[in-house]
Length: 283
Ligand code: NAP
Image (cartoon, rainbow, N blue to C red; front, side):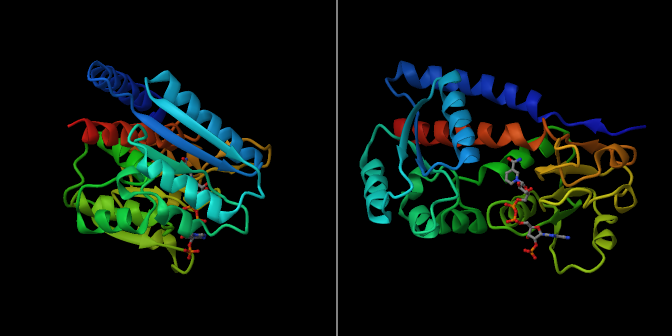
């Protein structure tokens, strides 16, 4: 029997409907959750991502503050803008769209965002909170993957989860979130010999590589949950993930499609983090 699809589109809609109720409740207390989005330069893909974030805010009762700067904008000026937004009590989340022009140090920029407003969860302090199991903002993509896994109602306790990829924004935080949910976690990467040896033992596989067909049918345990974070293009230019979807769905128990899986969840969890930040302030 082919795997059940885990629809990120449907789950996103459900979470966003709940969010609209939370923003409505905040509005009765005179609070509008606000997300500041800073875009430096003219990268076309970044412009699309920023537009989608601004649109999602408008659709769910959040206010967005979009600041666009020329690629020549200096690092000092950018840091000054972030400090000013840190001090602005009407702003609850700050996001600087990556990548930044080469003359700007991205880590310095991220570390300048107040931890209380780091709704992307990328700062070292937010990463430390996740590592220590303290409350804080979780990076949106792995946070969304956890929601997708939760939606299957399969308990992670005692399960073996294999994460393929160890980036600071996806793979590593994903592994920590799975660990927190009581899974036994293995992290694989480009120097892992025989990836299939590990994935064949996995009850849950999260593929976050950026290379199509990384996970094939012979590498998947029957009934496993497969979460595909990858965003790649096939030979026809069509969006595809890291998982060989058509063949893996024949053995997996659950699988996310690309598009319509992890992608929609990332912006949704950004909205969730921003609303949560506003709720903390409104307490
Ligand atoms: P990244 O920083 O390039 O990290 C990729 C990871 O994959 C690295 O840890 C790398 O290992 C590992 N890797 C590369 N080749 C491998 C192989 N043959 N076998 C096993 N591991 C291998 O990428 P990322 O930012 O984590 O993103 C991963 C993918 O997710 C990309 O396609 C990206 O576009 C997508 N993504 C999607 C969303 C979404 O919203 N849907 C959000 C974020 C990212 P090393 O560390 O050894 O180099």
